Length: 216
Image 1 (cartoon, rainbow, N blue to C red):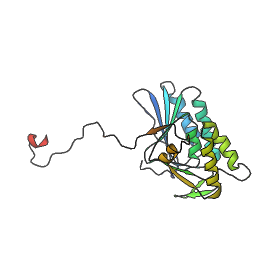
Image 2 (cartoon, one colour; image 1 turned 90 degrees about the horizontal axis):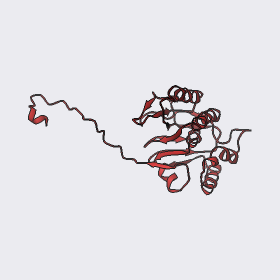
Image 3 (tube, rainbow, N blue to C red; image 1 turned 90 degrees about the vertical axis):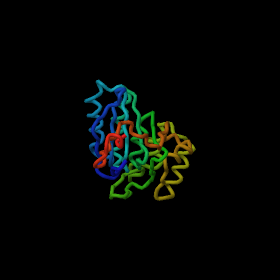
Image 4 (cartoon, rainbow, N blue to C red; image 1 turned 135 degrees about the horizontal axis):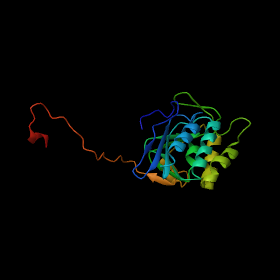
């Protein structure tokens, strides 16, 4: 995915799959519009939708906006099957991760990129102010992990390891494969990293003077 995960977050145009799955895609920061945009898209299309899939490509954002988005997703999954997705080459960092964890079915590619940290303000590439796991006076690392990670059925041993790493370092980069191989519980299903060939016919303009035979 070529879009910038640290750009201003936006919900891409809504799509439906052939089996009436509502396909939502959030690209960019977790911002003040995220919860409302997702909620409005679901409300507008829930009459047709048989399930919902939310794709994420985000380097994070503020915890208050994150919590609002989680609230919307929690309400959605009360009435319909919800899946969160991080596609091949996409990023889910900092505040994006609890949003991803809001779903019981969580799919991600082995080549996806993840970033965990404890700093309450951390400048990722692009100058994003990512408010994270220990906002002064609001969250301890334990409190944050217990509230936004543990309820999703993550491995207690892996969470203990994560806490130790982020308390003693500036951050922790992981690939989807790292998380899957560690049996962290972050990802419940994997996505292949091979991009399928487009089955649609591709028209190649014939060279000047080319006859029917040389066009194939």
